[in-house]
Length: 66
Image 1 (cartoon, helix red, strand yellow):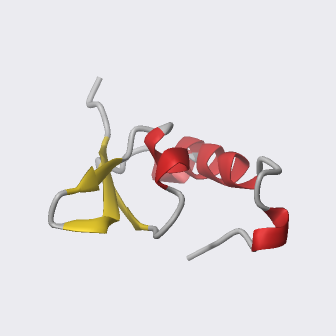
Image 2 (cartoon, rainbow, N blue to C red):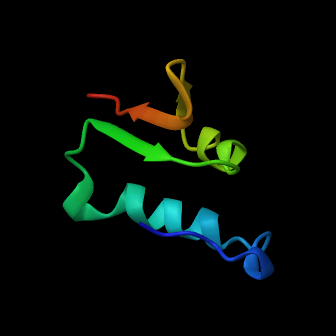
Image 3 (cartoon, rainbow, N blue to C red):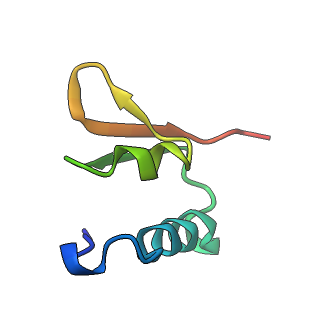
């Protein structure tokens, strides 16, 4: 679990963390990603995550098999 403290938001830290995690060689085989957020939907949508209809705090990304 991680979060960006309010005083450090808007500095690109969240983007850097998402890029690192999604491109990490040990995690490349993951097909389905889940996360929970109250306020960073816009950030995660940029990386292909979509809000789940059953819970607005849950977001999911299904990786391409190509």
